[in-house]
Image (cartoon, rainbow, N blue to C red; front, top):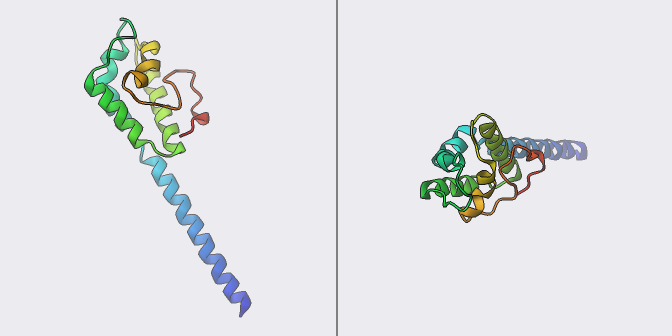
Length: 126
């Protein structure tokens, strides 16, 4: 009888672990590169500008930066956003990385990493 109860308890524990694992992967998958790109697309003219980095980004650009920040809550989500931004940056000709690095601060957003082609996204935390 005790063995049967232990077996039931073990099955419940395994089931809970599986559910939690699936839920965490689903959360990370909720961040899509197309969503990140769409949110940050109003920033492209600013990010390609050769002007001084003190230029104020467009209002809709900062709204997109805030939206991306609000979407990424978990470490995995921040890493996914980081990878999306690196991928987009690598495929965008004429991107001004000085502007990209300063964009969050110019929009009043605090990020735990900078927009840079050298950012190691595996080390990004919340």
